Image (tube, rainbow, N blue to C red; front, side):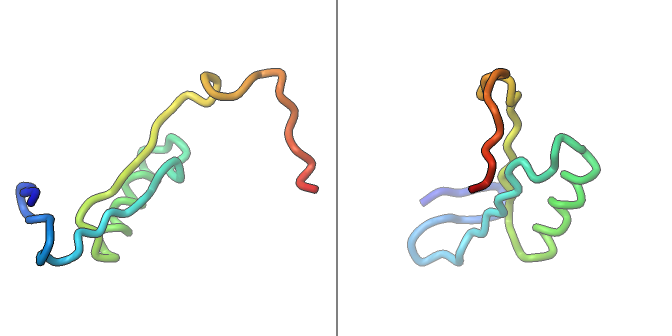
Length: 68
């Protein structure tokens, strides 16, 4: 059993809904806030964001795929 400030998470407890916002905020704080508000309206109890510097993961010499 896990206890957050407002919820108990575990067997026999209601579903704890986590909204996956990921990188969809594109680094824009206003978009992140709007996404969080939409998640709350949908019934999510929390949201998961991701932040990273793509230059650390993608080789600058890599070419884009042609989609085919």
